[in-house]
Amino acid sequence: MSTAISVEHLSYSYPGVDDTPGTVVFEDMNLTVESGSFVAVLGGNGCGKSTLAKHFNAILLPCGGKVYVCGLDTSVEDKLMQVRRCVGMVFQNPDNQIVANVVEEDVAFGPENLGIASPAIRQRVDQALKQVGMYEYREHAPHLLSGGQKQRIAIAGVIAMEPKCIVLDEPTAMLDPKGRREVLETVTRLNREKGITVVLITHHMDEAAKAERVVVLHGGKAVLDGTPKEVFSQVETLHSIGLCAPDTTELCFMLNQQGYSLELTCLTDEECAQTLMKAFKV
Picture 1 (cartoon, one colour):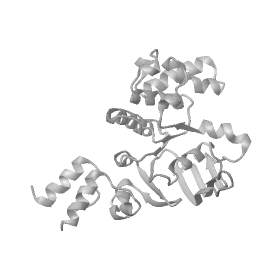
Picture 2 (picture 1 turned 45 degrees about the horizontal axis):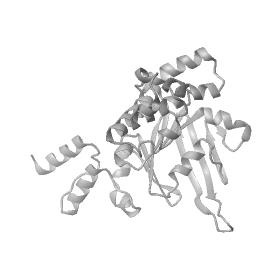
Picture 3 (picture 1 turned 30 degrees about the vertical axis):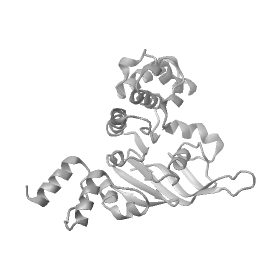
């Protein structure tokens, strides 16, 4: 499997103001994201999740070390457009990414800026809207849509640019449960059916549990890295850095504190129910 993103000995600090010291975020960060994978990145506030995401699209550049996107060095200025064609970004607030008064015009904005010919743009827009389940809304005004629908339009706008990787920086933070579910289902389908590499920055454990791989950041480093079951079974480690496991795993952990001996690998409600039924011999 090829590498989509490679972070090598990354260091980054936000500059200080009025002669005050800057804020160090990373000193020696290393991470590899394989092509076609679905990776969730977790961590407490201020751990550098969003800072790392912005390095993937060259919004931020390393103070030291290197970030490579599809083999391209993000710090090389004349490679900037190529990097951004490879990696599309979706942010928290979809209203900040919607620029047109009609859905299909908004989705067309990115390809137009890339200089794509009009017939190809029409094809890309229609295809992208179908992929996120929003084709029937193509002539609607974006401001009349729900939060989840707006975020799916933002994702369609990224898809229309045909990136190899999509980085989503807490895309469901401002959405209700229905909107969160819509966005997560869309992202998961794009990864599985289209082979698009997905990096999901999130603070929702249930969202991270649906990824193939979970990376937990703390103190400027990846302190946990593995499958969701491998990572979330380390409940005490997560607690020590101010995080928690999914509710199902936390329930089994609490029961173990009362003397039971349950596996901490149940992430779904069904898995949890089976674990409890087996333990209590129901």
